[in-house]
Length: 259
Image (cartoon, rainbow, N blue to C red; front, side):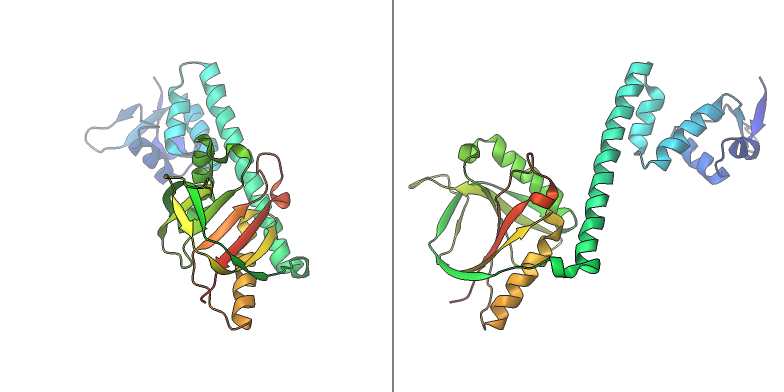
């Protein structure tokens, strides 16, 4: 059996020696032989295929557990299923990044396209039935979407009432968000009750990533009029994300004001 030292093997696989050692430590690219005295690693020529597979997968940011799954797959059908799942993940990530670029275009290239009309009106207290859960500030859209999905699975509102997300006015690294629909009169399973009184609100049309623009518009408007927002903040999702594109999403952003 012909073996080659790690330096030669790394060059053939178009990897650095450091990367080969790292994949060895991860159990993905174990050398064919290790000199017991010097600790030098030696590899077979047929291991270049494995090394190249690892490099290609990692180049697509495929997580190491998935790389391990591909290498350990017992047959081509299993490999194809794993790769299909990664293809879907990458397509979703590409779509997300394209949406971020469109949002940047709206913010920096053509900011005049983003306009908000803010209105202040009296509201009665509103009870919501749904559920609450933790949300991370750096994954607010993902975590909130998961919470919305969980509420919909309970059958709340039966799809007729829009979901309302309730957020604190000031965000920390992690905070609690409540999502629900208007509760029936006399309901005993109320998740949260929104206060009555003056509320400032505006409509946002576009992806959820651009909602900070709506928040800013509301806050600037109420402060210009001498009011003070007190929280919580609500987002009412008036469009079904499963039937509309992100550019078509309609969300009402509202916050109560100090009396």
